[in-house]
Image (cartoon, rainbow, N blue to C red; front, top):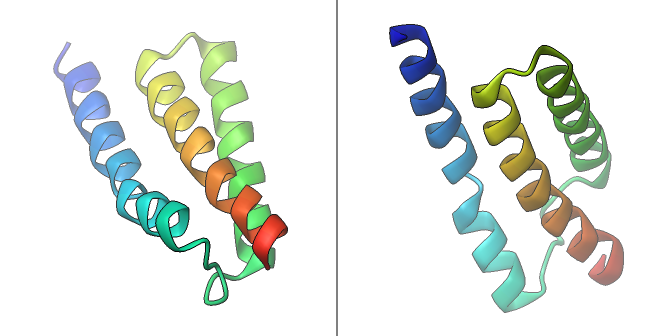
Length: 83
């Protein structure tokens, strides 16, 4: 299962990368430097990766994209609410 371990490690790294931005956005309520178009497309893509992972029953894909979707959707929420 080395491929699963590599997948989980990659999932952790790419997912945790969003945490500082979520924390900053949550604290400051400022999203002026974040592109709405980019985050709409990105969040949609992450959601589709999550669906794909569920269809394949692939734990690394589900874990990474489920968590990243929540983090990305949080930033998107603040972008839509606070501009």
